[in-house]
Length: 421
Image 1 (tube, rainbow, N blue to C red):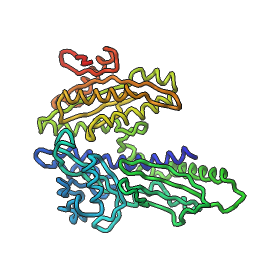
Image 2 (image 1 turned 135 degrees about the vertical axis):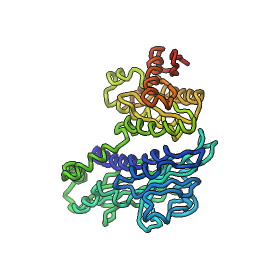
Image 3 (image 1 turned 60 degrees about the vertical axis):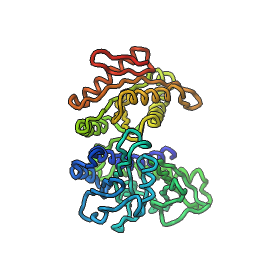
Image 4 (image 1 turned 60 degrees about the horizontal axis):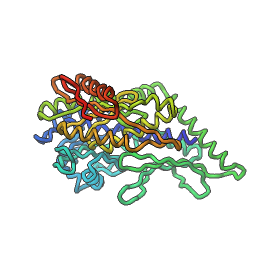
């Protein structure tokens, strides 16, 4: 039963994360130096093609300059998101924290309820030292986005449910969905925390004790059985729903195990960035790394421990790279990072921080300590050569780092791959 509600919570998180990460597709078409947004309608039309997205917008300095679709959203043009509207605190939070934030439900100017994701964009290398360019916004239809979780069917069988999030600033509890009957002290329930970016969501499913001959364990078992049947029912829905599910899966950009981008999205994103690098004559770098002796970890501690290592490693790497650097799982125990608007020396500094973050702190798993190190390969992305060549060069540098003793990084050189450690 516990595993069942974990799966349901993960599905909620994965769907919202997949939709929110599309903000990066919009950020890729922003020219900071010229303060222009090229091909907005074309890219936005692709994003809004997902049935749960109401609209997308870009807001230089917080002021909405472009929105798609325009029809029905004209009222939002010229609105300063940092000073007006129900989501202004969320917009300020995005600017101050320099990260993708998510919140709601809010009442929009069109008088409908929405969930909102906001990504801050900065024009320089370090968002604490360089100019704030503006915001990218994705608005989700609410409560339509909750339909695929089929929460209302729980109430039909006498179960209570409640889905809410906690405002990180004032700890206010904001209800997203709930059954008509509120929970009482006599009710037994199970609860799952669902972290979604800055937001802290919670899902609770319970049953009120109607017959005193039922033990608590039996009631909890009934809840678990129902949820298992519910999930089986969702999986076996009509052919039309299966087609829709397959379409959504094809659109998914998140690696299920690690929670970072997958290989497909990484290639798609960097390909969009290449034209921007070429136009601005800026720098872009590919960093590939994989875990040293990962097979030995699986053989010694088991594949479950190996999966835990693969989950922990990217979470540590995220703390060492900048908010707008792109991290993805490239396959197996191999990961890849895209870094731009920075020189080689600073790229090496970032990579060294990543290496030390893994080496200095072993991973704890079921009372055991697992030491983890990684080898890194760095290559500059030459726009004329494309991403595939840059990946090959980074992979060659990675091989050189491993050949040189592992737990180090190497930089690709067209004449020789030089070990820097």
